[in-house]
Amino acid sequence: MIQKVNEMTDLLNKELAKLKKKQEELAEVQSIVAAKQADLNKIQKEADAKKETLDEFETKLKAAQNLIGSLDDNKRRWENDRSMYNKTKVRLIGDVGIACAFVA
Image 1 (tube, one colour):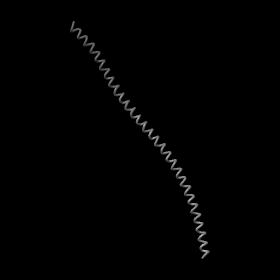
Image 2 (cartoon, one colour):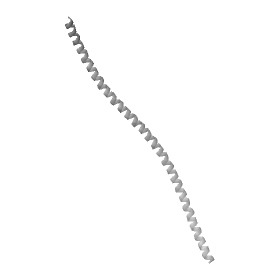
Image 3 (cartoon, one colour):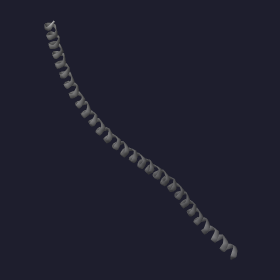
Image 4 (cartoon, one colour):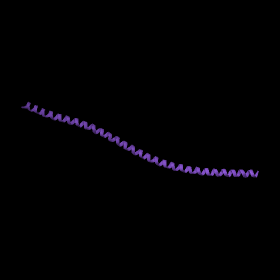
């Protein structure tokens, strides 16, 4: 009976040693996982900052495109106004000539 108890105690000690070894391995793996999680968090923060910068640039690009479109519209309007003023000047000269002929 004592011999059986001693055998079981030895077996228990071996299993406890295995358990301790596995717990140490688990702790090592958990520390690696924690380090990798910290790295992931750091990379995620950098990615978020870059995304925010990208969003700002996209907003500025859209504003610039809108400005260019607006300036193009104004250019066309100004060119139309210029041609109308040139036509008005030509007509004014003719109208003054007609008026002078009528008065004379």
